[in-house]
Image (cartoon, rainbow, N blue to C red):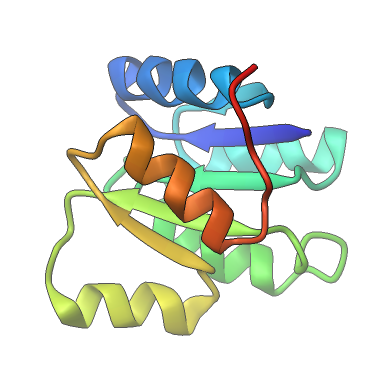
Length: 125
């Protein structure tokens, strides 16, 4: 399975990549929504996308709206992973098409639980 991690923080991308690799994902990375769209245009949809909200160039929210508007990407599962904790922001992301929402900081166990909720059976690699 392949996962796309979209976050402007290299450290956060490394944390997510390590956690996802441990449960069997191959991981590709992008530093903002625009880079993510360019990557998806060349590779096609991933089995999962983990997306930060606050990024330069194109935010995670804007990325979700764009992905959900493209037939070839619309079915890709998306989890918003962000420091945005306001209920209104959570609702906005879910309304835009995010399948799940996880707040930073998080544990690897919390990530695994969210993946299971999304129907992505994962285990220790």
